[in-house]
Length: 427
Image (cartoon, rainbow, N blue to C red; front, side, top):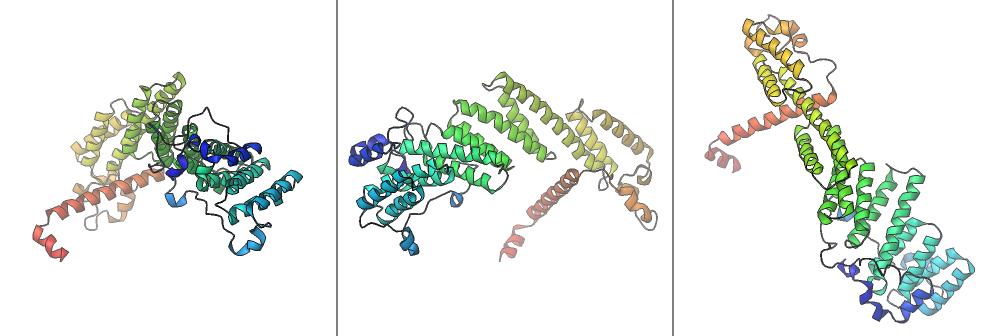
């Protein structure tokens, strides 16, 4: 798609009469002269570069080339040549028959795609859709002009118009409250398609901010983080990069809230927020970073405590619980659960000294022989039962920890097997 990123100034000499015709219809051929060029140049990106957080290439909007197809009797031209068809379409547009005029311009593009009138007709078709208030259709027609007539139009100005249509699509969507439904995805993909076609455009950073925001609306927080991070890498000195940093922090906090048992994610977020606090940001943004950092630390405190409390559950011995509480207090001596942890640790250590059995404390202690023979078998379930108020996320965390431990054990056992045994298995 790089052919589509050549600046309009390289084609003005080739436009000739075509450029004059477009200008005479109030076209876009003079707009955007003073703005940065869309085409790739020094320090800008290409459409072949990766854009994490965007949909896969198979999902990106790609217009199909217009053809007459099986319904040529309806979609085909009514005149014998392109010039006559153009004159007839212009006459229909002047009379106010916009529907018939759109079909006439479209038929010209389908029947004679290589003639000079084709890009003019395609532009007029897009302008009619825009004038009619149909931002979705206008966006599609401008995109078609960029894809199939990139060297025969003012690419920069057309790209800007396409961006305006994307913005209108989003605003229209807000008014009819379509967010979190399919149209949200359609609008986001329209922005993505435009950024991929115009990576060096002046509006590209703002478009990426919008893509990230739409990802958040879809509750796709990892993808939103990827978009914001990529924007910061592409335009590190821009205002949009500073905004992206703040929005990325928000998305990361949403992920922390969604996966509050994942201590690795929380630690990564804490490191990110520490770096954000030192960045070139506004006072309000720094205040947010400080607040979120405190929240993340508190969540790590709780996650660590609840994770260690797992060792005090139905599947662990009293000694494991004692070691877990000690580890927690070493990491968080002033943590939110420190007082509770100290009290429980003192209770367990006292029980360890006195040799109090599991049934009395309600802890699983294999060393005490609970469940051996007939003694106490009827109360095992009661003795080992986890509290009824255990949240679902903690149960998920416990299952995850057990799975990781099982994987580690399997790996140790696999590594311990002799090489000849592995060779025998492979054969």
